Length: 414
Image (tube, rainbow, N blue to C red):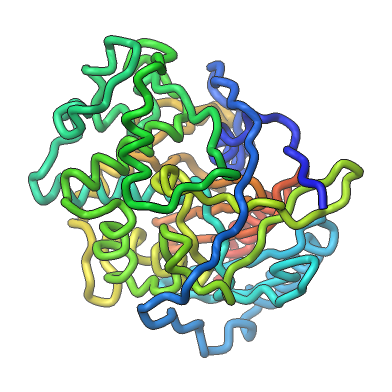
């Protein structure tokens, strides 16, 4: 089995933004992203089942409504036309997961049905969990958004002397001038708790791309640094902090930042395009603990529906509150311009992309890594959210097409 790096090696830098901009019909704002080195992914490691109880998939009928029937028909059509081995789709409307369905297989070689509980590598959809963690620590008065990074990570250094002025807010809004990750070393993964700090300490030869605060330039690297900052401020590892303060309180019990904590029976394998256009199981798995904050959340449409409802409720789900409602004025405050859509600006909040669809304000993030593409989009005023997860990285737009279709149908339904 030969693994082939997909074209456009810099795509990992831009894929979350481009996924969403393509859904909304946007043109990115002028800027030149750094070119990342080709990524070589790593071998999957043995995992152990989670110690927490699994999330219960919906037991109520999700396919009786006209919306669900239309979604079934249209998503099935788009899936049949695609090369994606597997796809999972979830739609939230009026505080409920009204549609949750899997299509295809988790592994082209061994089979395995995709279900609403199938776990996918979420890639950059991890980043809003970083932002939420930062704002939780802000509420606890343990930091300020305008704190210099070095105030909390004194060992963070770069070749560029301006590094000492970089702030948490600039990192969260991709406006710091930080470069991007050059090589994720998926083929040489690290699994220990010290991996993230070692990575942050290794940045001494990197330079900024532009004057801090000048403009938008997507940086996964900045979020790795933020993850280490969360660990040092909270006194817990980044993964443990997210688990204790976000995942478990929201009942997202299938989900984890750590590969060792996910149930291997639920995990979808990633797939890529081979030399001759064929779809192959990825030779390596996109996991490396040093890139946890930017990339390694594992989740499914059931758990992500709970994340959607909690955020659309401004931090509350079933009596549990993870953020003060007022904190969403920070999280979703438009700041840096990302692109333009029909004279309408696409901006960035604290990690979240902000725009609109059919006159509805939208809040969203996409993701893409070797073997996976993912989308998570909310229209909070309408109480609608769409989750689309695929175990294929290839030259097609299925995830974007399904997201747009599901959003149109959900916003148009009674």
